[in-house]
Image (cartoon, rainbow, N blue to C red; front, side, top):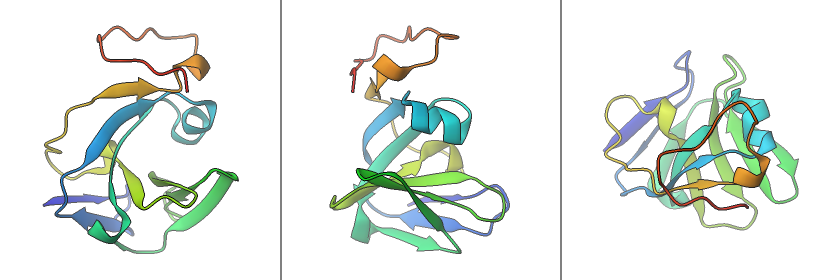
Length: 124
């Protein structure tokens, strides 16, 4: 079981599913919303239980982002029409049991850091 929460505890989430697609996103939207790189993994939508007042924002027609309206924690990302949802690995309470697989949107990464961990890097 993986369980997580926002900074203030108003939102909690949990899943019994094994997360997949663990990545670090370097896109400009994730950087602006999180203040840096956003690490996440995804599970089927019906495998994630979310409790609390999630505020959803469609930053583009391609996806929506879920955050806490109380503390501002950026917790979820879901592509339009997709049957899975990503959750912030940094919001997991305790060990994640997940290993990062790749970096995504590295063409948009900030100029103030280098990626040197040897994981695959996808431009988009």
